[in-house]
Length: 544
Picture 1: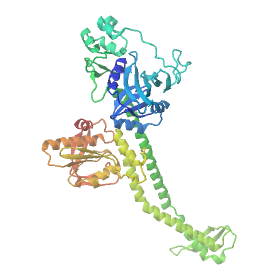
Picture 2 (picture 1 turned 90 degrees about the vertical axis):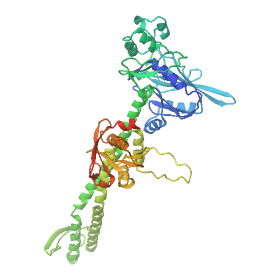
Picture 3 (picture 1 turned 135 degrees about the vertical axis):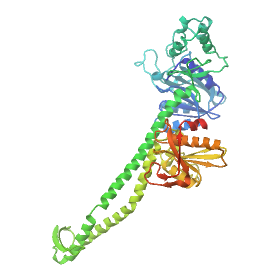
Picture 4 (picture 1 turned 180 degrees about the vertical axis):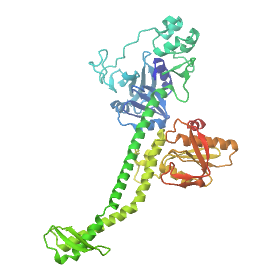
């Protein structure tokens, strides 16, 4: 996706609505930073090649980005050092280019204050973010540009900030004063793809689309819209353009790629963790199988008994001896028995009996562990299948906490107690019903076999690993409510199933009392007396 300077102007309007608030937090990663203002406002600034831009995001998205950050650009520490406690003065677009400047004022004592600017150059692979002082001197920057790399300007700490080259053309106001198709392509401050699209419109539509752009007094609405891969915001929704709904244009450009990348990296981290646990138990079962098939304990017992039976006939300081005796069935037995020449015959016998007891005890312990390890292996395999079903930061965070791989908050106070957490699951409250969805193997078992009542309705995607969904009516449901809740639960079960994020799936449902545990099944259960519903994985979000 791409965008033009006119969208940056709309960002300056959006962000300036929060001026007067103070910076409470500054954090970020390799290619992005979040400035948190009072009133739970989080400003995302990104300078990645494929996600450069600005947006106001939710607190949960901020936490998700922070949790997934594996690197931190030095400029993020500079932002934190210089901006905490500072007042946000507003945002302006510089020279009608894809450059956004956010200004802050911080009181330093005795009535004195200092000014700091964040300059975001949202220019795809040439994107950058800089922190400057009130005089325009660069304090820190994400990307250093040396003279050998760019003959026009140098971007280094300690130097004065210099804007990129100016685009030559006419202003929107000049074109509106004398509109003509011939001069349309020469308008500065508007992206080329948008100008090409406007060239296909009539003069009246072009005027209505451009009138208000770059007008500080314009109080009308801007309509975020998509034209192919180009994102813009105009006073008019152009014919043939796709309106952007549910998210802002800034979120679509900056947050969505970061969130998708974050979710994928977090899922891979979870998958690696679970795969290691699976491999460990597979190797443990292999070791147990080798131990149970090992015939050395019986051989060691025979060696010990033969030595005891032939003590009078064994010479000291010898490495082996041909000994005869009888096996457990009374048949005559003759074996060459290895001996430790440093030990006496009786000591060699005791050593073999000790080995026999040790290996026999190990085999008994291993035999008792087989079922436990197999159960753990089945659980981890189900966990791996469930991890592939999760596509939301909130759900992944719950699973990370369960697995112990999430970044933990420091405990406060000596008396702070460890909080007891329930297995990962989601809860949805309705007027006459509660719906639960498991987000892990433990979450599924907890919902189905501990939380759910016998007459609660149990849902699961047919034939694939996925979430157990429980519908618990809290009052008598009408036929219409029952139909709607069934569709909602089927949608949840389809969404939280393997590969079900975008495909409709058949979902089975029955009363909880008809569901029984079964090791190794698709849902690790068996069930009967069920009905089937087609689940649309997108419906539950629209429903809520």
